[in-house]
Structures are given as C-alpha cells and as structure tokens.
Image (cartoon, rainbow, N blue to C red; front, top):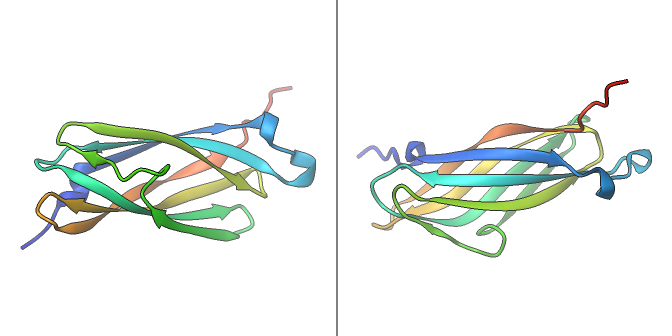
Length: 127
C-alpha cells in the first residue's frame, strides 16, 4: 500500500536576519525562521520529531535532531496549521536549511514530511 501522507503536509518557512544579535566582525550571523506546517490530508497527524540539515556557505554542515518542535509535539488536524518560530546561528552570511519532520498518522503509520530547502541570507544594504 502506497502512503502519500507526506505530500499532504505542506511546510512553509519565512526567514529573518537578526542584526542586533549578530556580530559580522566575529562571523556570527543570527537568523530566525517561522515555520507553518499545514495538514492537507484527511486524517490528523502528530509531529513527533525533527531532523535539520543546516549548511553555511563554507559547506560546514550542522545536523540537529530532536523531539518535537519548540518543546511541543503538536497534533495537526485536517485543514489545520501549526506555526512556530525558532532560530539558528551561522558563521557565514548565507546558508541553507532543509530536513524533515517525523510524523505519525492517527492510524499509527509513521512517515517523514520533507522540509523544502530554504535560504538564510543577510540582506544586502543598498549604498
């Protein structure tokens, strides 16, 4: 039986650079990201865990795995969304994040919802 649950979970990221927490002279670039997870499927799904792959422009990779997100393991019902904001620090002004959420359907079927890659980038100031 084919399980297409992961396609029914939509994940959207919005990124902000945080200049007041960053120190460019010290190669410290702080970003926040707001993730919205929408369940477009027909049954509720619970977000159990996360796996992030964070890559800076020097190809330094950080992998982060953990339970839930921001201390929660939300149950997302059909047609509903769950949103949260978190952050990361890079040593370069540009990087990417991608990964997956480990989910479980109401019937106990586990699946991974892929997090589409998004870019972390310091906005360039116009002169």
